[in-house]
Length: 149
Image 1 (cartoon, rainbow, N blue to C red):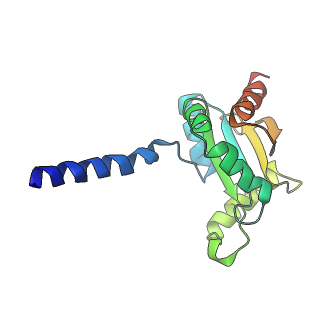
Image 2: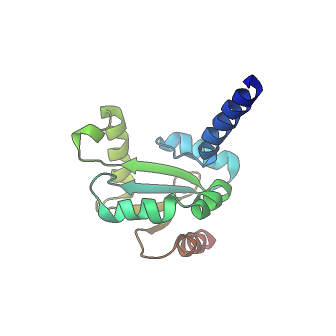
């Protein structure tokens, strides 16, 4: 009986760890640049309003959260998120808000949401896009076209 409980607990812990293998989103551009330089991958910077922007929420569900995109991203991209929530319960720290505002001043002058920017390891713009009503694979293809230029 104890052996069965041990195996059950071990299996439960293993299964709960699996989702953590998806690539994490960086919140700091300097960390993303370092990761990008080390691994030779472009940075995918996403400006989003996670609690108010309908197209942002759709992009999250239809593309970013798919296994297809996560698999592609882990091999080809460094993910960087700049969120601009509006609800008090989702408020960012003042330091995080300043950081995101600085990113917006540099890369999102027009305040578009969602706004997706591909960056070189040095932070130079490679391409820009936003929400598109297409499949995750089509979005991946779209990103791949931008990185070929």
